[in-house]
Image 1 (cartoon, rainbow, N blue to C red):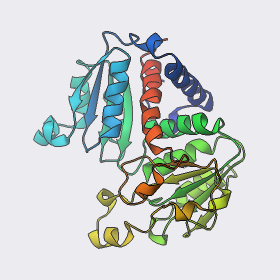
Image 2: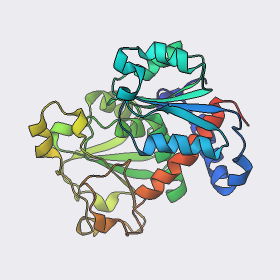
Image 3: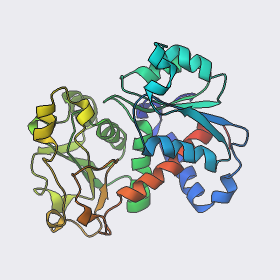
Length: 304
């Protein structure tokens, strides 16, 4: 495997292998501290990011490598009209591996077709975000100690939420997985996810608008932000942005070992009174992202 563009690029065995390496990194950080000495990661971020970009940069630094790149399209030659294909051809001469975030779906795939160094898709529009999915899987494995026999609630923006689409695709490979899809009608999961992933894999799912209706059944509750940047109409965003707000009251019927996740950034969809609840895993989830990206960088650079 030379690039990671879509979570489907990875077999279940490869995903499990990455999780095992990430867990070993957590347990033996010093062992990995010089693995990427002399290597460089370029972060090409054409749209804003805090966690993903810094997580990649931190991952490479903890492996002993170096980092270069840009954090917005305006600070790159894209502002002059340079194509993604030309950019990666040039940057491939400066770096050993590239992490790219782009607002246009398919841009990292175009980059991968022209690049001579590995490309990691760090998010392309509303399409894919495979390293967030790997982060989510590592979080679930570390917190629940399994990736099977789980009922997972996903709540909020299921229409544009690339993290949700990738998570459903990945978890559908494991046994006895059930989904509760919680969203307003306007932000329901796309039909292609239902038909091509859930129904094709005989995954049981329920659609509801009520966040509390199935709360007692959930092992995982994955909250998402209603993304202003994906809306063409600001009035629609304003109407839907606070549709769900998870607070302590709504968790009264939840399991004691519920794992509450969120890809972050959070806006209003999880009240701060949940942060100190032992079931809140979203800040730990962000930290797990660094370790799984360390494992992925090692795999793509073929470093043992």
